[in-house]
Amino acid sequence: MRLWRLSAHARFDAQGARRFGGRWNPAGVSVIYTAATLALATLELLVHVDRELVPRHAVAHYVDAPDDVPVERLDAARLPTGWQRYPAPEALQEIGLRWVSAAKSLLLAVPSSVLRVPTDLTPGERNYLVNPAHPDFARLRVRSVRIALDPRMWR
Image 1: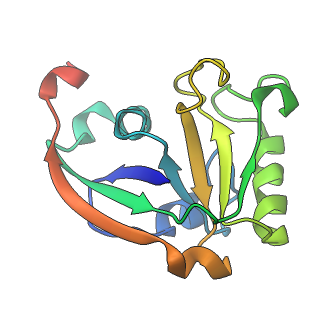
Image 2: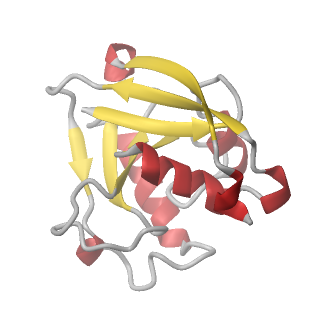
């Protein structure tokens, strides 16, 4: 399975999510947010960065996970009402915290709140949380490439 993360820096780590928290993790909990496609990773970057701060160039991290790596999946139907709101309901952080603490799977597949498409129509429109404390984290192969972003995306 290939996953994607787009950022303004060359590090593939959980520092930002651990420091500030996110939709699926409270501050202090290390999680790396990735997406099933580069396009979704781009959308996720654009909604989280102020327009003036969107980088002209970014680093695309592509992550190859072996097929036998454990993945837990959450479907929108199992999530609390309003799960896609911004700011996100605290219940989502609790779900993520329980997942990280249980350490049963390296990856947690969650529906995208940015691109709200039924996952049975487009199963690729998912985000994947990576637990860097999971023993299988070392099995991920992470590579990076610099890419240019067309400025028309944010005008």
